[in-house]
Length: 432
Image (cartoon, rainbow, N blue to C red; front, side, top):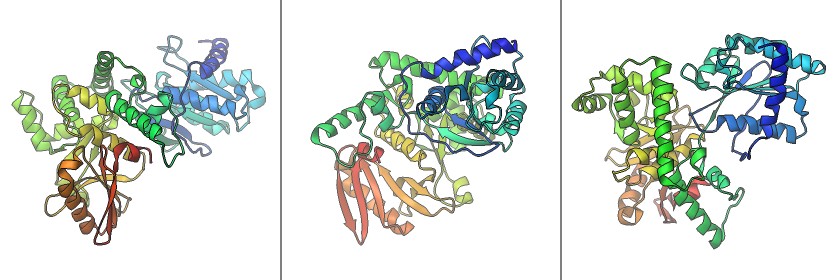
């Protein structure tokens, strides 16, 4: 591609910033001189839209739109071309030479992995100019995680998640930001949205699709894309059938404690022979591709290593789709709470007491100091006494003063021996 063509592409793609209606997401990033920013996250969680939204908000806040160079590389103009970052840099500054040393210039590159030798090009760009650079990428070869690694310490990463419950409501035209209390009408509306969130899941594309059959077809395509592009092609996996069986198993049993040996035996019983080390390796690949996240048992490294691990899929509707003919029994609710907790930037564990009571989530800091204890249940009315005994026992062992039991409807506060247990609806917790 000639420099003249690149200049035209820069001008053409700038119009994409204002194309389509974009919903504001709960996302921010910090910039640091001479470092690129990389937006990481699962496939189809909305990274491309977020990149455009960030550019749009910069313009709306007063930045000259000529200082924003937005380019998406996943189109015919760039596929299999020899375009480099250095050529894009040259084309941009030939268009706007007055901005050569301007620190308000921002380069936003979507699907950066398409360009050859892009890592060296980005490094050169941020070394030569006082600019901000924001990158995303996803393909069989590169995910956003790989991009951060490729830049070798010259990148800051910010993880981008699928829709939170509050964002899901925004996608459906309901904004309740900043509210601490709700009218009866608002509460009824929120509960209805929670039911829809439960059914539709957290993928942006599915937020407003009412046709369940269509949603399931799209979820099936997502599964196939994650399997084929993010795992098989990216890691050059030979045992595709075995990996697919493991991936289906891990997603279907989200939130259930799993040991490598048990997974090995379960797969073997269905004719898929994978050793425990290979199972472990495949699970790491799924985590790296943001298909699943692991939650170990609370404790030191030895305790974590010697106990089963819980795995949570990226989206609760995907798990429901995989369990179409099986009862979920509160699994969707637990997955929604986990997705909410991921945004806390705290370490997430599960906790089991000496008497074998289990708390679904224990949030802790880097030093393993307990911060918050949470139990999720969809049947509090029938299991109230057991749930309270379990959370109280956990609080006692952890020397904590308060914990949460999240339910579908109930709300109360229980005080026992100076400890407080907050019982509250899941939907209300998801809005905190």
